[in-house]
Image (cartoon, rainbow, N blue to C red):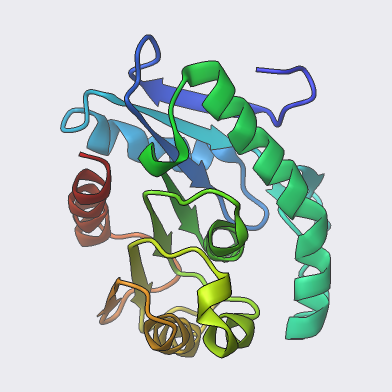
Length: 218
């Protein structure tokens, strides 16, 4: 990987992977957080390398975490403008993964949590290549109206979304909106709302993630 690449953590089949899972963390966290999912899945996905990069920008809230884009103003048009700074950096990182590990885009799945889900659902439909799929936890879809208005302009791939109905950070209404937009635009999408779950991933979510990733990558 290039020295200019994002810092990242990895787990799994590094010598000869046939597929990649790229995990995108949430606001104020880092790649080490989501790479903790990899041991839960790697035993059933022996041909897969799991990679979890740090987001490119220090978190504006301070501390040791990172952000993909600013959330100081959560008006959608401002978040859409802010996300544009991170998109080319993430695209470059994925391209470097393709080159370094010799895996094609149709064997790459993106897994996001919260802001990482927002990144995944923004980048993958607009990419030149078609990804294997996107698994999103506790996230939202930015600029979904553009996808709904002109669905043929965007790449299609399977999507799985999960959300807790007690999420205090990203309201469950964001899940419902994303599901409606993507389904209306013709995506193959599965979704689940977990009663009582806050802003997080429970064990059922981990198990569901494994099922989805095996389905799209194997």
